[in-house]
Structure formats: structure tokens, C-alpha cells
Length: 455
Image (cartoon, rainbow, N blue to C red; front, side):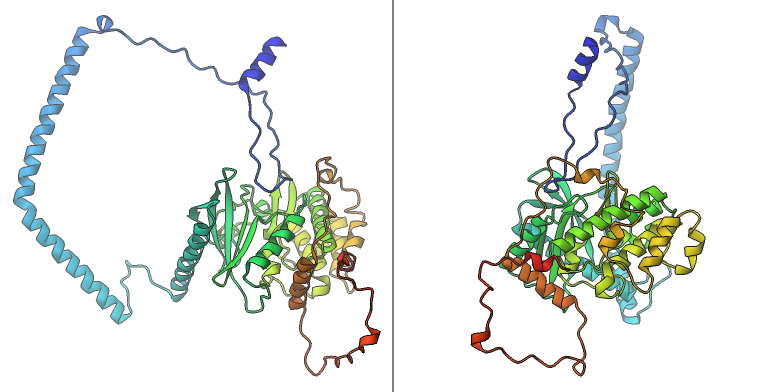
């Protein structure tokens, strides 16, 4: 036992490196019972007296021959270069003129040879967007010395106009992901330092085991730049299709996926429900961007990501009614976890033998009256799931309240997400109340958190 203790003490494993502001992500320690291979004993070098005289003489001959051959080759090459330099220069000039004329003829005629790649307008637009995104990214990193650019990434997401970059966090020596997306016309968030402070306050309050953190969000040059932790495990969609997260989106999901076990579907579904309920308690607008690509997996825990898409009013993947958008999005995620395919309600009957309780939940979600999030939590499928991540003694207080300015910002974003009524169907404006009838209980320091909890 004493020898075992000495071995573990000498091994001296350091704690696993965690991602910076994400206090809920911790690497699980692997088993340390694997035996290390014993290194071979160090051999003593031979002295000069122990060397074989014949081998030393042969080595000296080879060395002398090598030096002589190199010197003769060098002299011959110098003579050839001095003789052939004018001819080589003429050939290079003629080849350059030929290529230049060919490029001019190709650009004027608009035709390319079969050996040259065809320059499509879509490829040109994408390269132009990538160049603009790289310039904006470098501009952001120049004023933010905390991060450094590692390399641009391919189009790993479903949005063609979204660019991704791998950056390095100098403060805690780890990697991050930076995403850049153009701002839509209906974005109500202004690009100012005050608004940036409100968004950082919001993301600091949204720390939760089932919410993927946003470390920074800044609006610059008509684009939104978001910094999130680096996760090598990828998303829930990567798990379903057994793909690598860093591959291009158009190629990594072409293979046929496989459905997940019922226990895993139930655990991921309950974790997503808890994340959605937490967002609603904080007064966050209805989250319409829930899909398997926006669910990050870390140590078997599903975490909702893409919160910045709601704040900048990005177009969601599916057009869903705002009232039931979260529940319907969760139904699509459950269906994809079971079938590894897009939602097709005609296949529910074939899933019943293997996923009976999941099929019952999806029947309620896609029925005439979808249940709310609290009703789904109390269902037979989700209520018995053990949420071990919520039982830690070091978890912070989730009841951190937001300031009035932050709540007003969320109110503006929510009103921008609501569909506008036609002018003919709009209700007439209510008459203005006289000054004596104004309510006197709306004090300056009143907290509006309870009103937001009714979402």
C-alpha cells in the first residue's frame, strides 16, 4: 500500500483544464489504474577505444567521398547556371506573357478551360463574405487583446452567411469559437457600449447547467460577433449522425444516422425542458432556435446554445407560432433523436413499439392543443429523470434578478419577434387617461421580474 501511495504521489496529475466563464463544465477524471510502460534502461555510449578500427576507417572514406562529390556537383551546377541563365530568363518571361494573355482572354470571353475550376457567382459571393468577415474579425480582435486569431473555419453551421473562427483566449490559455453573422433589418438592438453592457449582464445571469454560455456579444460593422467556449464533443446532431463538428455542414450530415436509446432521449429531453423553463423565468423571449444543431453535449449533458440569435432577431430554421414555438421545437428535437431524420408524423406508428412514451409525448405536442412546458415536465417520460447537475452544493443562486434596463431590452426584443397585425385588424388606440387617474403604485424602484415570470 505504501508503494502504491508513493506511485500516485509521484505521478502528480494536475486538475483538468476547464473552460473559462463556464463554471458548470468540468472534465471527468479518467481511471488512473492503467500501468505505464517501463522505459528501457539507458545504454552507455561506447568510448573511442571500444570502436572497431575497420568501421572507423570505412566511415572516414565515406565522409571524404561525400565532401568531394558535393564540391564537384556544386562547381558543375555553378557553371551550368552561368551558361544557361539567359535562356532560363527568356523562358520565364515568355511563360509569364502566355499566362497573362490567357487570363485576359478568359476573363473577356467568360469561358474557362476544362482544367480550370469554374468560378460560379455563389462561390464568388461566399469568398467575398469570408473576406469581409475576416476583416471584421481582425478589427474586433485588434481592440480586444484578450483574444488572438488561430484560423478561420469552414461553414460548420446551417446558416450560409454565418462565419466561424477559432480564437485563443490569452487570459486562461484555452481555445474559443467566434461566430459572425450579419444583422437582419428587424434587429432592435443598437450597437453601443450601453447595450453591450446590458447584454453581458444578461448572459452573466443566464448561467445554468443546461444553458451554453455566451462569453461576449458585440455588434460591429453591421454584424454580430459572439464568443462561446470551445467544445470538441460537438452538438446533438453530431452525436446522431456520428460526424465531426469541424467538418462542413453540407458534407458531415450526408451519412445515415442512428436513433438514440429511450433513456438517452428522455434524459436529454428533460435537460432541455429545464433549460427552457429557466430562460422563461428570466424573462428571455420565446426561444425559437431550438434544434439538434443548437444543443451542445458536454459529458453527457445537453445544453441549449444559440441565445444570441434571439437577441439579434435572426430568422429561425422553422416558422412556428410564437406561443408554442418552444414546445414544438422540442417535439422536432425528440423526433430527430428517435429517427435521425426530419419530422414526419406518418412515422409515429412505426416508432410506437420502441419509443412508446416518446410517441405519446409527440402526439400531444403536435396535436390540436400543445401542452406547455410545465405539463411536459410532469409527464411520465420526464418526471423520473435524475437531474444530478442541479444538486451540486457549489451551484450559484439562480434567482439573480435583472436590472430594469435589461428587462426593457428584452421587452423590445420580444415585441420585435411578435407577428405584426394588419392595419385593418388592429385595435383602435385606447384613450389617454387623465392625469388624476394615473396609477400611483408604479414606483421607480419597482421590480418587474414577477411579470416576466408569467411567460
